Length: 190
Image (cartoon, rainbow, N blue to C red; front, side, top):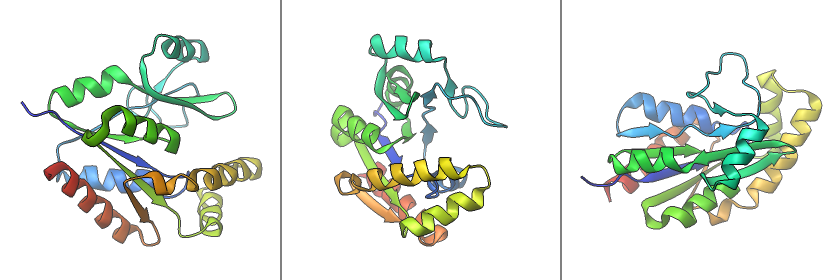
């Protein structure tokens, strides 16, 4: 059996990353499995443990870090941890499935170092910071302080874009979906 590959999609919050990934999954064009990240943040309305995230206590998350159970993890916001469990990804690629990771930029680069040429890192970029701010405001789920924090984080994350294998600017969602799907196809089929 051929091992699967790891595809990482990363973007600042509000860039359409989840919409793009979900569209590609919905097309059923590829044998893709989603890697569910772990976090210590509380679930948002409608989120399901084990499907949207593995929701862990801070103590549980830190214990798994100490036991080296994560491929990558990061304190993305103060006292907010996100990470990818090594066992989940390894199990899926050993079964021949292609695994998609939806993680932050530093985590993406850690995955690239870990899996090398068996991984592909794609960065979804907003057309501008002003457009990103507009998208976050239109969500209606963020406070002004939260938006300011996310914009600061986005500017930091954008500084890593050139280290990714590919950059896709999400100015038009349908075009971005097509571009990302083609990047998936080229990587999986090579």
